[in-house]
Image 1 (cartoon, rainbow, N blue to C red):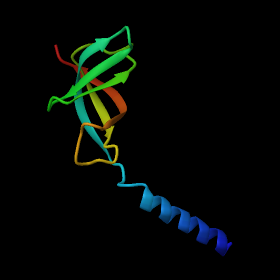
Image 2: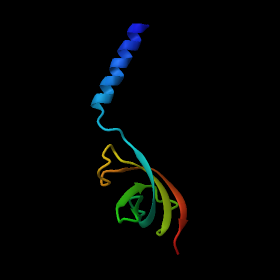
Image 3: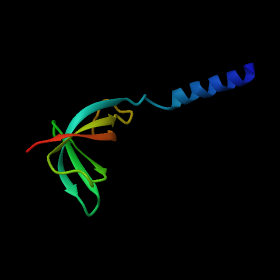
Image 4: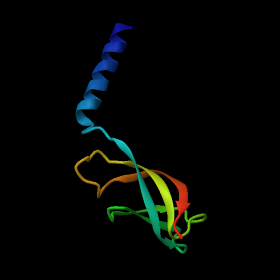
Length: 94
């Protein structure tokens, strides 16, 4: 049993050393600026002007506001490679 625990410990430490920086998630709000029905693509923009896209435009309209959970992709110093992990409808602007 001790040998199995030791091997697992070594594996976990090795993975932690080679995995790079830890990934963090953060919430933000965005607005839908464009919908491409042909490619099923929704473009959303945060209030700093950074644009992101996701698939699944069936219930979205332009000017919808959404709550987004983002993954920093292991690079907290830049937003340009962040990944959308979850999007939820929050309302709309008329």
